[in-house]
Image (cartoon, rainbow, N blue to C red):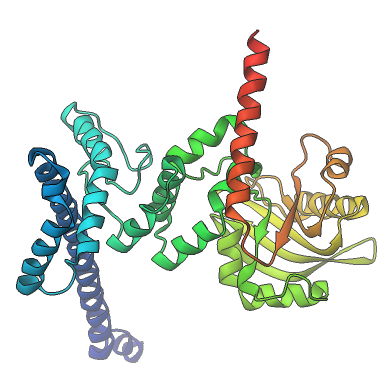
Length: 375
């Protein structure tokens, strides 16, 4: 007993524990320093942009401000501070201030009025709700400023901040037209909410996209492939696949078998969503979706609801990912309150312009329909 106690409380054990605690303190401190430096840099660029704009407004003519003056300012700043102050960068800082000055002033106004907002209540998560600080990197803002649609830009800002997207992930989500895909998959009345607060997961339909973009699998769109091959490629790129599926997904298993009346069945992919607290079953279909496929998924969902779902968990969701589907057939086959969804997948990035045009037309049709009902 004494020997075990000595081992448990040995100097090496205490040293390892102390080392871990100190290591965490150092790592947290370094991360905090990086965050503070980033915030200070972005805040400084915002102030530089404001100075340039105010000089332009007070200088009488645009010609005085023009490229010639910025070129001279750039030369002097570069001589003193090094890289980072090219004419193009100074122009970006000016544009940054013009883009965000109104929202910063609104945030400061709310604070001065004593409004106590939390980060989840604040629609613009890229600006801290209490301090007005910018929380994304300068590289993030450079990309965001290229998004012309303010609602779309605000959506990607909110998602980047809430989900801690890297610049690479932000670019990937933008290129995959996440905003348009989610907007076209939600209720028309909730598109404004999507733009203001980002994606809010409250019910199964909030998770669904159509189409799902699987360009990271690096599979040619027209190549011949089997469902097992598609499944294997997804497993090889599981992290990217879960990111594409959306928020809160974790992986449970592939080809998960269950037996019913001595007959074996296998679900291609079993996921779990922490936000909705439910299983999500994914079946892969490389050909045209058939009504039998929907019936099979209904059976899978029923089995999980009756035999796998724990007390307190929510009903199981079924998603059929297919290369081709008939929306009318899906609608007629499934009951209105079904937790089963059919979505297409594709291996190339969508045509963003076409999706934008489709979304605009969709919203205009809804507005026309609402106006007609009021008459």
